Picture (tube, rainbow, N blue to C red):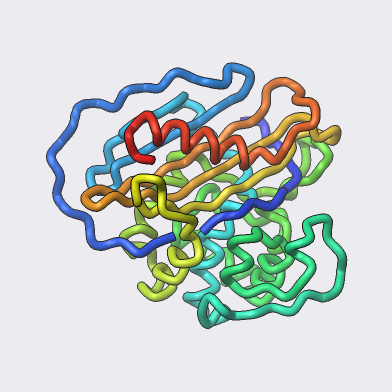
Length: 284
């Protein structure tokens, strides 16, 4: 696959703890949803976490393509931070250095909870700096997270630059939709090679809201652009939805294949697409 590089943009969202999986009866093969965006390379997966079966999908071939992790990397990074003890709890604070950012919410001290909610890039960079290359690499391998490639630098490997440079060697950490859901299933049931507490705290700060049906809804977005003009976006939204008797993991991703004028953050469309598809499954 040709390597791409992109610019990271913030995203907001938050998770919930989950009981051990229960046995569930096998179900028929999931329907493949129609692609609602033919001008985008879309991937959508909704997977029953107990059975591992796909509940609904769009373009499964796209879900096998590794794309820049963007801010979805904050999910495994949170587990690493809590597991290593660098983050003591959701209130662990890093002080803002006074450097102004275009996102107003970033221009103040951040806790682990506000970091996840505001998708604060500088907090991630302080955390990876404290962790160091070797520990970060070891965790990625233990978690089997994406391509595990942080050659782009411990403060930039998951981010995406503004310029579109196919030969760029940095901005290296990539993951596919199927790899996202595999990781999320392990996190959902505290099956990652990390302490249970670190996984529970991560899900706690991922929690977003109760859906109109009263279901627990958790997730993390990620955004970027594939071109210098910022007219072609990449958008991610990954997470969990928990009903009284079932639990699901999902991954939504897309990249624009044509220019979009006045494009908003890609994560917003990815999140809305997810909600629309959850409504079709009576899960919203």
